[in-house]
Image 1: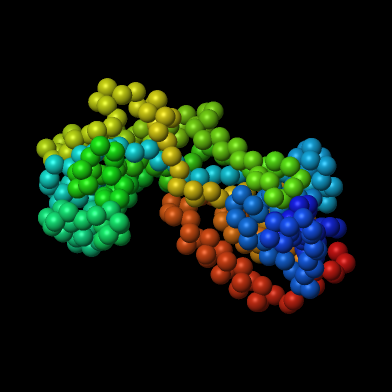
Image 2: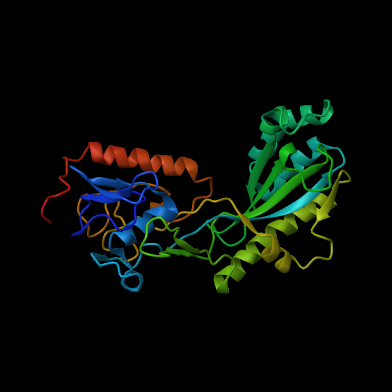
Amino acid sequence: GGDGGGGGGGGGDGSGGEGGDGGRVHERRLAALVEVVLCAGTMRSPQLLMLSGIGPREVLDQHKVPVVIEAPAVGQNMVNHLHVPIKVRYLGGMRQLCKKLAKLGGGSGGGGAECIEGNGGSVLAHLSSSRRTKSGTASGTGASGTTASGIGGPNTDADLHWIYLPQNQPPGLEEDEGMLLLSQTSGVATRGNVTLRSANARDDPVLHANYLKGVDGTYDVSVIMEGLERFQDVISASPHLEIIQPAPDADLAYYVRRFAGTYNHHVGTCRMGDASDAQSVVDRQLRVVGAHALRVADASVIPEIPNANTAAIAMMVGFHGADIIMATPPVTACATR
């Protein structure tokens, strides 16, 4: 389905959708000769499924969308990476800091080693050379590293992510003075959802993120706090660094809730899994459960948030989907179910 006003397919198949034309009032119906692959993203894919009558019955009834397939999991399970920054003033000794960060949490030192020998060489060069402008070379230079803290289990650890990017200086610091240290969650306990705002596809869907809410949110706060405390330990041991924020006596639980941000790594709203699992929207072949000739292939199908940027994984979903389709006999969209 395009971005037109109204739902797409009927009868539980992927026969096509309705699309607007450059914001004009008229609409036109598009019909597919073979199956439809929906790739609208973690927010829009569940919205378009719901507008097509595939979703939670109570949501469809509320917006007077005829129910084609009752699928309670559509739009559920939304998860995203959270992070909280420590703002630091650099007073010299970047090489020593990199070594300390490499050893943080018993990590392998990949991030710190990179700082010293790889991409981070540009940081050392930057610090020892003349000042560069934010719109020039500095905008593409920097260094970062990540190491696990070891709290909570294999999929719920805090990541300690440190960033030196001149274009991302904490306010009030000179260009070569500042650095951000981010404590972030590898896995997030809290789950949100995406639902309809109206029956018009031109209206944005509604996101209930639920970040840091409830019992699961309290756990997420504790994980991020543990990462912040580890960073504070490293910084307090260095004569070359000064914490600008948070204050030494800050309530870290409040600080986490006040300054938490996200990376826009939303996944999960069209969760992939076994077709027999009520929480699955698509099966392992990316086919919408209960529908005919309809697949979803984007970040929305990722069932659990990875300990990584989601871009490459979303691309692999596309590659995987293409391989599946190429290996499958053509499916006629208008075939009888």
